[in-house]
Length: 117
Image (tube, rainbow, N blue to C red):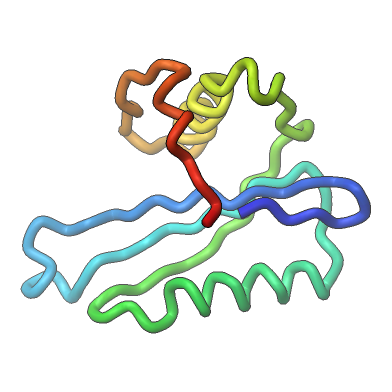
């Protein structure tokens, strides 16, 4: 999700922390990070919370929480010529969060089938 607030953009990073045996552990947990380099207006922040609740609030046996991940500058890349910049940026965010996760190998063509339909 991209949220624009006064010509600036913020993003959501969603980490699905699936538990191997979710029945005995009380369910799965999803961590949502609002990645931004500026403070959102109250209305924009409420819109993000509403979006999260609409998307994740009715998931059976699943909880979620959102934290803000402040970055120094807005993510900018050469769309559509350097789509792998997205992977590099997300990997950097994961490292900043101290999460032990390596994204799978990708090539530019892997982004050809993305759709917002």
